[in-house]
Amino acid sequence: MDSLIVEGPARLSGEIQIDGSKNATLPIMAACLLSDEKSVIRGVPSLTDVFTMIEIMRHLGVKIKLEDDVLTVVPDGYKGNEAPYNYVSTMRASICVLGPLLAKTGYAKVSLPGGCVIGPRPIDLHTKGIKALGADVKVDHGYLIARAKGLKGASMHLCGVYGSSVLATANIMMAATLAKGRTVIESAACEPEVVDLAEFLIKMGARIRGHGSHTLEIEGVKRLYGAEHHVIPDRIEAGTYMIAASITRGDVLIKGCEPRHISALIDKLSEIGVSIKSNPDASIRVRAPRSLKAVDITTLPYPGFPTDLQAQITALMSTAQGTSVISEKIYPERFMHLGELNRMGAQAALEGDSAIIKGVKSLSGAQVMASDLRASAALVIGGLVARGETQVSRIYHLDRGYSNMEAKLSKLGAKIRRIKGKQ
Ligand code: EPZ
Image (cartoon, rainbow, N blue to C red; front, top):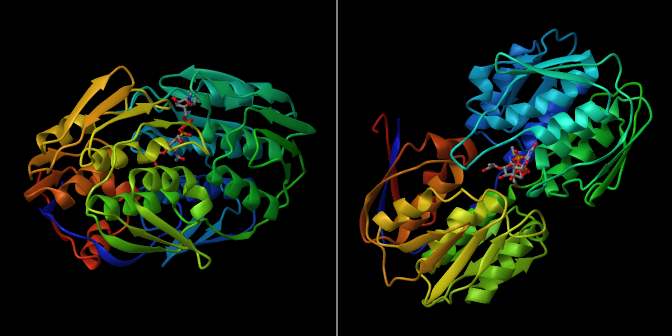
């Protein structure tokens, strides 16, 4: 397993280009299963999660190839309808093939995702939705098996204990495109990635209204066609580098991003004293002063502060003046990074679903271990300003969601390198 070695402190400056969104790409790839025709998706990031999804599609019998950032998908005559454990266990987003397979073939067998390091990851909302559309659902030997002789449109309320669900909304929206009649999803997720998926489905011939709001209406159609699409920029990648620029008190131009998608982060960074300027050419300039103020943050569904930036902003707040309280309302157990940041000299304590972070004057390099994708990014961010060497091990998590992070950071002036095959 590879490690990253970061030598701090660094001050980031320069320009960085943001890739296409991972979390938009994955369900859009699954949506291709709804048609027999060729689709072309552009702006696809080179990430291990995307490679895993390509393997799943191949396993289903789909012809698919990625050249640079262009993905060509030819589902014609695919026969498979099973997403086995070895894929789902490495990438929970594999669950998003459930809706398209069921709608197109009448049968889907998808390994149950199980728990994960960011806390329990139930799929009750996915099953509630497909049952409402008329599917029979059972669990057998660790697999969710869904059958339907033609789905029927239905009205449903798709809200869980922690609010709406991004992938459940995606799954049910995809399934409903080929159902007979009208489906209404109340409490639908309105994340930009769900909107991007809806836009792609509409290009395929789906009839969808209300995407971007909490009420989605889908009028089922008989068939869908191939389509071409360019995925939206990755708001979490953009946000991660904005936070990296801020923690190093740097001056960085983030190019190819959509400022509207990260307004919650822009708001909080401005509140703590970072200067943010959004430009009409889809770029954001981030300039941070030496001293940053503490702030309280609560993660919430979009347009609230994203849970996928919680770990990174926690690292940043450990270098601000005063005490910050960061509450996690999506995954209340998503705090594995606190202990590792404390190894670097941070002063973070967990109280219920909140991290209490007392700002410190400086962090110091340490050996730390990445536990999940966004926690890994937080440790690298901490390492950028920690004095001395930080070794972040198990960075295969990082490769799931950030392409070439060390190259991108090096270009901005960071001293960072990868060591192959080290724990
Ligand atoms: C998506 O996961 C993202 N993944 C996650 O990003 C992100 O953290 C999450 O949305 C929240 O924004 C992809 O898009 C591939 P949810 P998803 O269903 O859809 C609960 C990353 O780092 N819930 O919106 O699986 C759930 O436990 C990843 O890129 C139910 O109760 O998340 C959570 O508390 C990690 N029942 C809340 O809903 C269900 O059936 C929101 O989760 C499903 C979810």
